[in-house]
Length: 216
Image (cartoon, rainbow, N blue to C red; front, side, top):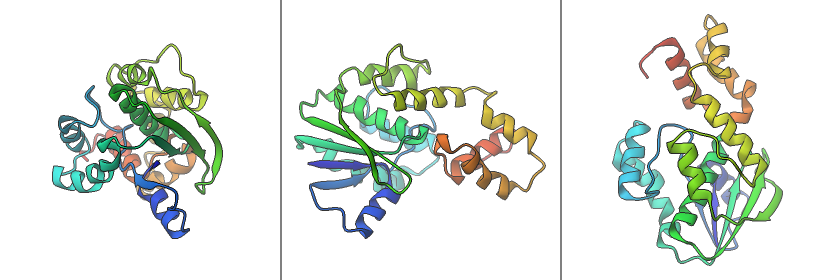
């Protein structure tokens, strides 16, 4: 069994609580809601372009993201359990994993554990991931809303993601209205005000810079 956790914070929490017991556990250290994407998911070209989009040296990106994904890329698991939150950040990451499995023709069982703020399981379902590669292309490449998404929580995440692609989005409008506030407080406040997006301080700072026309 391969358990894929949405990032290092969840992995560290599971490690501290002694929960890394049944199967292999790996973090998905990515932020697919930031930057662009290509169709050949998790190929070398995909990783190289993602590192450029995120402004990270490829060697650092490789150590942080690619090495962790080795158990998934090796493709020797007959069951995969995906642990992801319900916010936009996590749902776009989840979509990318499901699209990869669909693209590769994975034949094993896939379980989606929806987790809450303290990484506790809120619900668990088995996912039929066929068709998610087409959804991935529609969303992350074409930036359009798919006609049908089986997971309501992912549908909400995709809607938020697509709204964020517009220059006039609710976060940008909020930043403009509060542009005279202390920038540190503004950046931190965005996480609480727009928690559905799941963005961290780094992503919010980039949004503030973009709205203010500051080079990041």
